[in-house]
Length: 242
Image (tube, rainbow, N blue to C red):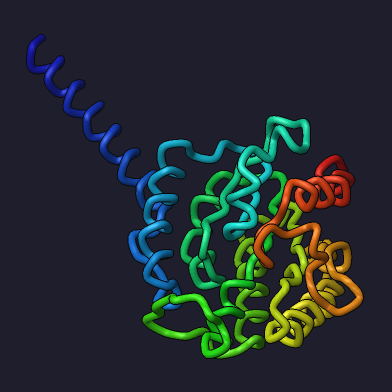
């Protein structure tokens, strides 16, 4: 009797250990060479937070950088209970590619993506006045655009029934980023015709007549004010509801 009990206990321990290892394998153990030094630490912290509150089946996942992360409780904003905030401040397209396993495993009903602006700051590191240290610089706007499409393709292949929405890269108050933001957004608009994702043109809602972020919508030239988030929510509510 004791031997049977021991075997059952060992079996349950093995199953629990196996499940734990399988769950842990969904999360990246490394960071991207394109992350700056600060982001490398924050990326690991956010991944640990994600592990503590894993995605559930059929939810709505917001993938992005600080603009998404700082939206905080998106459920409150959109008056729902289904949204999971998977924004990581400082993240780049390569960082997103590293962390898609968790999203795929949860089989969400919808995925919303906003990524690319940190990549473009890296491309233009010589013009960026912030004191950031990079191990490696993102090579070009074309690289960024193709990486966003790579994110979509990986998700669409694994989750053909999931609705994928790609938001255009938001404008900033930095003039040196204007051309490359437009270049990435033109690419996203062109490839939306293929049907693997729906384009949400947030850029056009936030840009002013000079091709910059409308001043009242940003607190520092990149990140959004409460008014900016309110505008975002008002524009995107039909996509959340459909």
